[in-house]
Amino acid sequence: MLLPLLRCGLRAAGWGLCRPGAAAAACGWPGPRPRPLPRPPHVLTMAEELRAAVASQPKRPASSSEEPEKLEENGHQPKRLKRDVGEEDVEDQNKKSPKRKIVLLMAYSGKGYHGMQRNVGSSQFKTIEDDLVSALVQSGCIPENHGEDMKKMSFQRCARTDKGVSAAGQIVSLKVRLIDDILEKINSHLPSHIRILGLKRVTGGFNSKNKCDARTYSYMLPTFAFAHKDHNVQEEAYRLNSETLEKVNKLLACYKGTHNFHNFTSQKGPKDPSAKRYIMEVCCGEPFVRENIEFAVIRVKGQSFMMHQIRKMIGLVIAVVKGYAAESIIERSWGEEKVDVPKAPGLGLVLERVHFEKYNRRFGNDGLHEPLEWREEEEKIAIFKEQYIYPTIINTEREEKSMMNWLNTLPIHDFNSSASEMQANNKNSKVLGAVGSQLKTGNSPGESCSRTASRPLIEVTPVGPL
Image (cartoon, rainbow, N blue to C red; front, side, top):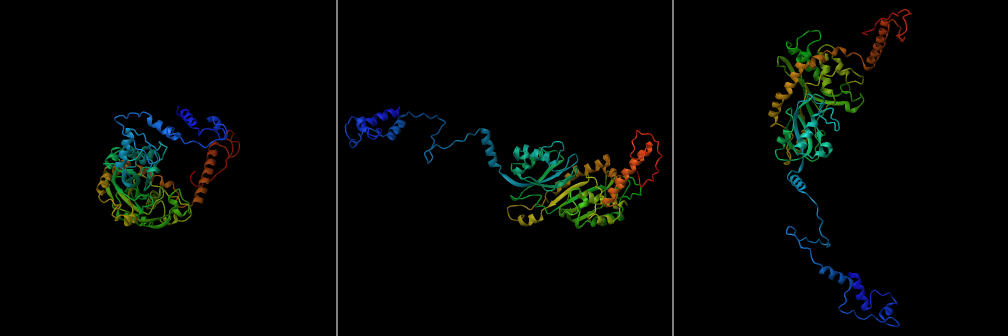
């Protein structure tokens, strides 16, 4: 509507929209094109006409709930983001509860769990971290997608305890929203045998696994495990004497220092540098009686441990004390040859505490962070052990007899042969077993059982048990 009017006005003025050379004809002047006449004051340019038209449009009345919007410096209206009420509430909550890097002090009874570490995507084997992550999500400490991808909250556990292993001082580091009453809310979504006992702020780059200097484990076992194999003892009647306890500590002391523990795990070879581990302290304490059974606790502190290492360390000492193996087997196990090392049950193993000495020296007194020590929580740790860990070990031992059943497997181990000798013996045993089964049916070795026993029997002198 505006452009036709503008074209007409400009033609009437004789300038602007006429082609060069055709202006005179269009305007009715013969001959060469004359100099343009001055523009009459009533004729407007295109830009002025457009501005005047826009200004003449009626303005949309603003509602009472709307406020006049201010233009930005470039003349455009500012962008508006659509947000519903729920998003605004979440944003306000996040502002009040910012994410911070913390550590949690955990205690749990490991019976019925397949270790500490979570297997994302697998619900077949339940772990401690499955229950922990679920409680963190339900309490509002982490978003749900952080539970599915634990790297998003920088989650790291200090020690990866095995199946059935408990803990009184496990430490995990992660980023969470520091909500009000955070410990009470997390514990409200956890089973009673898993507790968060403490929380402390740490540096942004803190990693509980890498910053840990040492770990202390305890192993609670019935003392009849140290009874000599030639002595027929009753479980409840046995009491550990001072001579046997002294021998146990003498053997345990052999582990102190740095040694190649490749025979104490299934994950390392003899030439793997990571198989060398440093043991700081190890000893067996005085025995005590619970539920008419005498128990003792072995404590071991080391820089780090491999899978099954502690259980095999204790299993080999038991085999020596009972008379199944010579004392020299401990030193021989550090060599390159493969040694048959028995693995004690996991029931009595407990992660007691973890140590952050270097971190405490650097950041513990900087005025912003606390040292990672838990003196104020020691009473709660002791109560939890008395309520959940010790009763689980004692009752399970009485009901399932895990230690006694394991002790009955010690005669099967060959503590005197190397790996090559054991393989050769196993091969010979299989051959002799096949020969014996053939002789019982009246067939020669390698002959089909369907054939009649027409050939003479072969006399075989057994070498070892068939």
